[in-house]
Structures are given as structure tokens and as C-alpha cells.
Length: 160
Image (cartoon, rainbow, N blue to C red; front, side, top):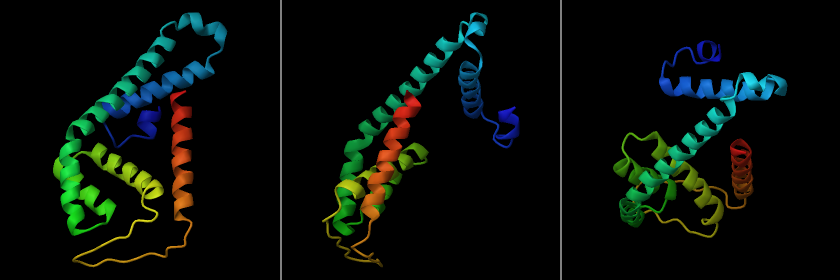
């Protein structure tokens, strides 16, 4: 029902798999324990799907780590021209990971960690092109740290 009512315009097997997994997880939480003997495969299916999800994450990490030397070379080359981290990281990811949404997500997450943890005292240098500055005494770093904690806590809860 959720697949046809919520995801009705997106006919894809990856969405169907996520909906089936969510249905099994909801059934595991909803069905009383005395009825579990009728569904002995349910815990194994949930554990298998979680292992499949972790395997996908490891595969993504492997793909990014194999492309990392080229990404770093391209980033350093672009950093000599323009010191804006997000701009340089996205351009280098577009060159070495073309048409990969996962690469875009990785760059955005990494940029958030970089801006929250490493860019507090870094000065920007722009040799050509237009740029803008932002007010230096904002609480944007506190917001980034809060978002990082929220993402980490929710990820731990989701995997648990």
C-alpha cells in the first residue's frame, strides 16, 4: 500500500525493496510475540537486509577510497586558484565521479565536517572571479556541530 500510495510515480526496484524492508520491520514490531512461530524467517530477513545495507555502505566507501588520490590532486590544483572548499570539492568530484549522486552526497557531508571542524581560522584567497564574505561572528559553527551530532545519533539509532 505504501509503495502505491506514497511512491506511485517512482517505479523502481530499489524503492520497492526499501518499502518491503520497511513493511517487514513494521510487522516485526507490530505482530505479537505469540504469533512469531508463523513467521520464523522474519528476523533473518531483517538481519540479512541490514547486512546488505552495510555491504552497500562499504562498497561506496571502497569506490570513494579508490578515487581519493585523483580527487585530492584535483582539489589541490583547484585550491591554488580558489580557496573555497565546497566549490573546489564539488568540481573535483564532478571530474572524478561524474553522474554519481553518492559522490555528491559524500562531498556535501565532508564539506559540513570540514567547515565545522577545520575551517574556523582559515582565511580565503580568491585570485579571480566574484566572491562574497559572511559575518565572522555568527553561530553557524554551533549549528554545524549540532547537525553533526544529530546525524550521528540518528544514524546510531537507525542501525541499532
